[in-house]
Length: 98
Length: 374
Ligand code: SF4
Ligand code: SF4
Image 1: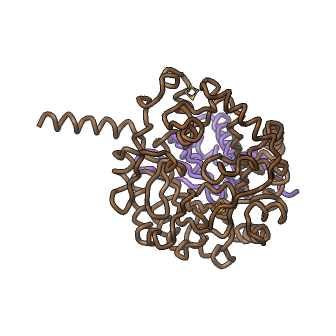
Image 2: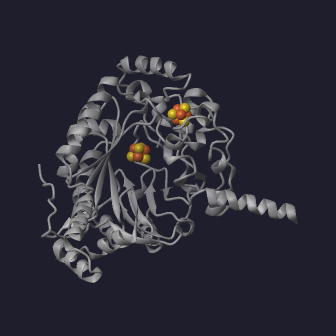
């Protein structure tokens, strides 16, 4: 048996897996995350998080950057970013870079 | 004048109450080297010379994208039987459609998979009929098919295209579910769809050999639940249980004319792949009408939208928003009336008869298969 369940933490560096992408859905006026057999309509915050998963910055760095941009407490943002990334990871929608 | 205005308003109201389609299944061809005894293609298969041309398919994809379709499933028959498969994929991807190839793998080579990857194919669903050459090739009716699938899965992984295994389950292979899940992991699939045979068309003719027993279904459900825990984050497991043993029917296609549409090889547009088994409906073709007209205006798509068509039993039931009264084609097959409550529903007056018939069929130990025509 191969493969290990990914563990998402603040130091994880991730990006969308191949076959998973953001798309503007002009007909419905929304942004959707497309994956095999799935289309998730995302709100603005979720779109910003997905766009930030660039395969270069860690989740903590991303949270820090958002905290600076919005002047919001970093702990709250870090936990939101991590739990969102975890949800995507268990759906096999992320590639774990580190 | 005022009459016209009123009519225009009515049409508007209907359009706005009907959501745009999310998904389209393009049956590019009915040609297929395999002959699965549960094939969802109709009994009367479309001939090669009736198939839509490359340009016609591309026109349909463009309309679909404009209409709001997000996922395009390239299916068949065996879609690899179309020589223009990479060209079609590239055109669909250029319209922004999420392209998913549903294939048996037979007819795909390493070179063609490379072309599909370059064309922008987003995802591949590869069917498996069993976990050994012997059992799989017996069901598929095609010697060497299993070996080919394993090779295809390897090429797909190498090309980096995400892979889902499609495992259709029935009495003959229900005991292999755990092994199928393990095979999916070995083949580096991200996802497996374990779907119990739906008894329309060819499968209906093979009920005595394919209908699973209650014990098999219960074991399968437990196996899937345990595997989902074991493989969380490694493999996504989607499961379609045997609905003859369920309490409530499934919301077939997410509701008639609500989520998706099917286009047959010759361009007829159907609310679901078995819709042609319902007598009295006529289906428009993309050769004569636009996809938008067909989706919003055609009688066939409007036939079972909303709740006006429902029997009182469903119309007065809270679950109508969940299952829409079940599957119309199943109501046709089991009740002889496409407007009936799906006989799988515990509230249907026909449920007891279905249970007796299911128990009777599942005790038959037939393993004679009637293969799909080629
Ligand atoms: S179900 Fe089997 S016979 Fe039918 S199209 Fe698929 S692979 Fe071919
Ligand atoms: S009565 Fe009709 S709507 Fe209610 S659960 Fe049964 S099939 Fe669904």
